[in-house]
Length: 190
Length: 410
Image (cartoon, rainbow over the protein chains, first blue to last red):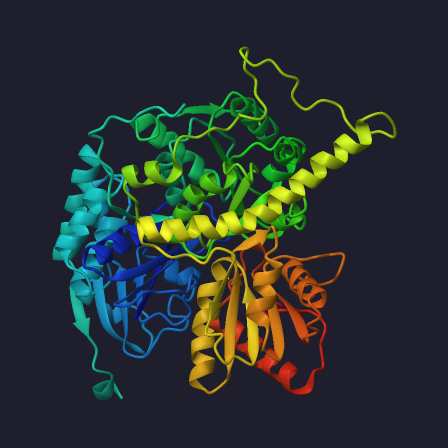
């Protein structure tokens, strides 16, 4: 089972990203449960969304405390919450940022990092910093857990229509294309 | 009454959706005639999905945006007396504001399905899940069923109409799904074919007994009671009839679930579900969406050699006394986990019912009440692992402790 935690800020679509990703996994025949966190939601406040995916049915409808993958769709949310809280060994981070890898604070358990300047891409595509679908492309590119084709299908089945659908489809594909993937050899670093 | 859908209208075979959207699709599949709504967290998106289904032509029902929950249910009572199949959903403060017509609905023997997207009650201020709202109305005389999964939300709403409209029952049904965890938790949900649902539900006959119908003029809900004339015996007749309908619902619920499994191919336990109870020495009793995490904890404990099983209560009102006693016969200790509080007994309400059933049956098992998941708090396999440990100790020493609050340190 994979446990994925999505971090963002209220209004950016972290919850919607979770449900589109869930639909993409279902396209591939996987079992999936997506549960948004809830707390004092308001636009701009840190929010999280949790996704479990497995080859067999999932019974737990709970939050995630030991994620093996953390997907950050906001560049600064990591300053407000500890996005690495409870991260599993050999963890993955998919992060929107304009910074190079060396300037990012990382957790010692993180071994796979995908970086995408999703805010810049979003401003070009949407003229607003809405990064969720871009970062789904970045997630697919980094982890290989889900195909771009399945994400495309999931997006088609979502509530996006017409021009909005076309923009988000472009966002998904650019996120996939414009993500740099880094493997960190922890044994060498030690 | 039901409007016939365009025959070529295609429906998805499955959706990846949350419990609120699944509930709305169940309403469409049940060919409900009238929906009245007032939004309240965490039920609001359910109302939005209903409005969208109506706007898209997937739910050819009349939708009434009433000015509050009191009007919502009053409007639907009029519609039901005119023969309509009706639906609404509410929770928490909305349910409180609905209380006056809520009390009238079962006494009028008007069948309907109403989702309670369960929410903890005020105060302290909270907008998140918990069973306190639904549990607070447990003695009003509605049937109450609690769902474990999103799929069960969809299936139970459809089954709810069959149960409510059964001639032996004629009572309203609350299908309860946990605020936050089921209302917003998304997973794959399979939709039954419309033709299958049509055959399963048949043609509704809501107002054969009480009607607002110019061709059958009658006084609905006349004044009864008092201390003289025909009043006392008439009132008792109504009350006894209501109790009889509730008791008959137990077998109807069982039959309807069996028929659902036969026709649709999905099996849901109707009254209680026994999970790994074979040879169990200790038992957990759970209700609602917490059950998934509790089953995982039971598996982990079984792997360590602890002989533990789980009994999930789906039908809470009428309380399935016989089924609960049968399920727990043979164990040495019971731990009941509630998502709400019985202030009168300093324990959980489900615990109170289970203890009552065991006492009634002359089966005085050591038992303890555990309360968790209040106001949106998470109940994890770790919490249930602790419950299992405590109940296993209770089986060994028989020392019943006071109520345990599971999220006290979260």
